[in-house]
Length: 156
Image (cartoon, rainbow, N blue to C red; front, side, top):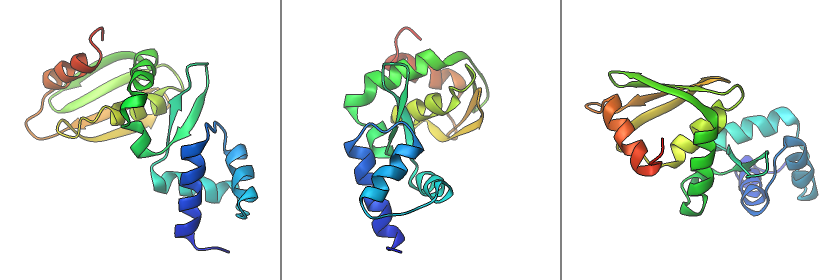
């Protein structure tokens, strides 16, 4: 078995060069590169790498690296994902609760992380398939968060 570090680099390369929407296809592409692995190993690798999914604009999603999420070329896709997935946004103090459509929490959390709000958000937590929690940094309130979000998505 090849070293994990090298395997992760190959996986990253595949994700960055292809719009892969399913783990089965990732497994096939890894096999073509000489890496026979189980779905469980692939899932652990994806989680360890912080891989998310981005809406493809055609009703599907594809895997993306964390650096891809912040890429300005993907900003419009991230905005679409966020707007399409949210039902409501509420806050109390430095906690923001985002209610999402069922199954959209991952895409909404990925979009939120991709908006480069490191000065505002301490951590984003996708708790269920229909909710995202954002813990804001010390001194940042929900109103501040919404002002920044409206700069990114004016019609929010």
